[in-house]
Length: 59
Image 1 (cartoon, rainbow, N blue to C red):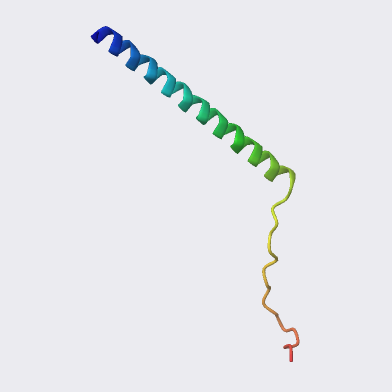
Image 2 (image 1 turned 90 degrees about the horizontal axis):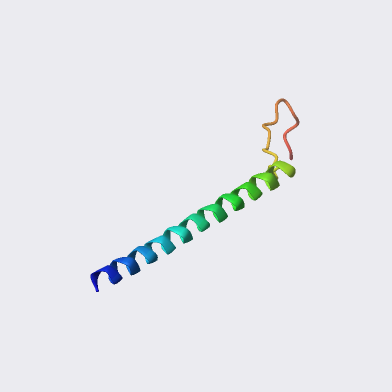
């Protein structure tokens, strides 16, 4: 009885660990893909408004 419960628990724990490992792997793959995409296309940078140095003030 106890042995059976223990085995069941171990099996469940193993399954859980497997799922965690899989999720972690998946997450890492996603991150890699994101980094690759970022490397391929330059990020859209909003041009920062530059202060007018000696330019005519806009009326």
